[in-house]
Each structure stands twice: as structure tokens, then as C-alpha cells.
Image: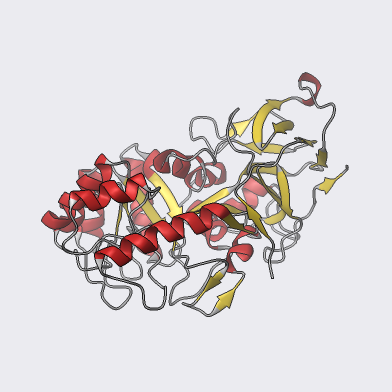
Length: 397
């Protein structure tokens, strides 16, 4: 079984030195002129040239050996249940496997795969609070799972959203997976959720599970959820002209997922970037799902969008880090002082045709993960899932 950790932030000083490339997660400056980073008590204290930093007294000293440090990847669209198990594929330790794919934060789009999931209003609220509490108290493999995302049903009133918010619920599950499928009805509930600080995501495209249905552009636009969930379909995408309308006619997050239509994914990315709104693009896997569990789903999306979509790798990595952090109001995903010390240390895969990690990703290859860190604590070393990295970081002390 994979390790689990509590939500308590550990104390201590972590120093990562000899970094060959530091990626910020920020579209405005994706590459930083830095070779060292210092974290104290789970947060980024400073970064830059090693000679300019206070690296003395480290509790954990890591030699990156010239590899690449980036913010931990964020999966904007997962469907957890409880703990590190999914009944959707009857699989244990799937979250731990995502950690080995560089993912340090996950956002629930609804705990919809729970056997017997309650659909009455009392039950769905109770499930949301329970899931929020459970994943807040226990982090599988150290991954931060933001869960407790109720699927809204007919008959809910404003007081229901106020009550959930008061009890710690900060997310709505995919609008459209429950009984609420009409734009006008969804719009009212999304507005109530927003009023109380609850962020919303709407299902986009054809049905994915029994009970869901087609959600087209008109419903998405009228509902005005904060995130256009899997704009490239989960699984079946809307026609490209409808996707263009969604990109052009609203300002909400454009979420592209692994378990969707790849042609639509590329079209949505290109359209959003042509509009000069690259900051809206965020990435998820939409898993576990009928198509399985994808531990390398975010890395594969980065490589696909960079190579076929002809986007610099450091920009594609921002889609899965800083963009998502800002859209989701998270304290991770960016190399900034005060942010959580969540990182993935990577290098180009052995025998890739690319001469650098960025070039290898641009050529469509997935990098090798050498270490993953959350809150300044090493959670795993060489990944069991990625191709082996050419060079590896090491814990010196």
C-alpha cells in the first residue's frame, strides 16, 4: 500500500541545489535564471543563484545534478472516491501512481463513482462534506486532493449552498452529471455557489456516465460556470464551431483533458491562444474513467500539446501548473516566495532524440521523473511509471 500523510505541514529547511533548469509555471516568465531553491516549513523561502542564498542549516539537502525543477503538476479534473482506491476500475494506489507522474495536486469534479452515491439533497451534501474532510485530513502519497464536490440536483435552494460553504465545501461537481441539465436552472445554482465562494465546473459534450447527458454550448454559456469542464469532451466532444463559440464568447477557464477528443483539444488550445488568452488553458485527465487511470496523463497532455500543437514545452507546462493554480485559487503551481514547496524534478528520458528536456517534450517524448516533493518533503524518488531519466537528483543529507 502507498504511504499516506496528514494535512499537517512539516517543519524544517529543504535546499535544492545544482538545478540545471528552473521552470516557474508562469506564462509571463516560464524560465527562471536560478540554480537553487530554499524552502522553509513547507513553503518557498527563496530561489536564485546558490551563492546569493542562505543555504546553511538544511534539514534536507538535495543535489539536482543539473536536472529540471518545476512546480508540481496539477490535475484539474479527477473523480476520487475515498482514500487511494477507485471503484471505477477497481484499482488501488492510483493517486500514488499519479504522484509518480509528477502530479502533486488534484481537483475533484465530483465523487460520482461512489457505489450508491446519494442523490437526495441531504445525502449529497453529507457526502460532499465527508469527502472534503477525508481528503483534507489524509493525503494519499502526499498528493493534495481537493475533494467534496457535490453534483447538484433539482430542488436545491440557496440555503443549501450557504450551508455547504459554511462547512468547508469549495467545489461543485460537474454540472450536468445530475438532474440539473437546463441552462436556466444551472445558472441560478452556479450563481448561488459563486456567491458563497464555491467554484463550479460544467460538463461539456456528450454523456459520460449513466444519468449524464449532452451539454451543448448554449447550456454552457447560460450556466456560466467557472470552468468549462473537458471542453474537448469527456469522451465525446462538441462540434468544433461550438468549441470556438465557447472560447470566444466567455472568459471562463478552458479545461482540456486527457480522456477526451485530441483533435478538439488541439483546436481549443489553438483557438484560445489565437485570442491572446493562453492564461485560460488548464489541464486535467478526467479520470478514473471508463478509459482507465492515466498516471502519466498530464505529462502526456503536455507533450501532445507541445509537439502536435507546436507550443514551447515551458508554456505547455504552465497550462498544468500556474494557469491552474490561478484559475483554481491555489497556493501551489508557481515558483514564487510564500507558495507551497511542491515540485517535480525531471530530466529528458534516456535515448530521446531531444538534446534537452524542453526539446524532447517538443518532439513528443515524456520526460523522466526523478523526484517529487510536496511541502518540502520528498515523496518519491525515481518514478516507477515514466521512462528512466538520463540524470537523477539525489538526497545528500
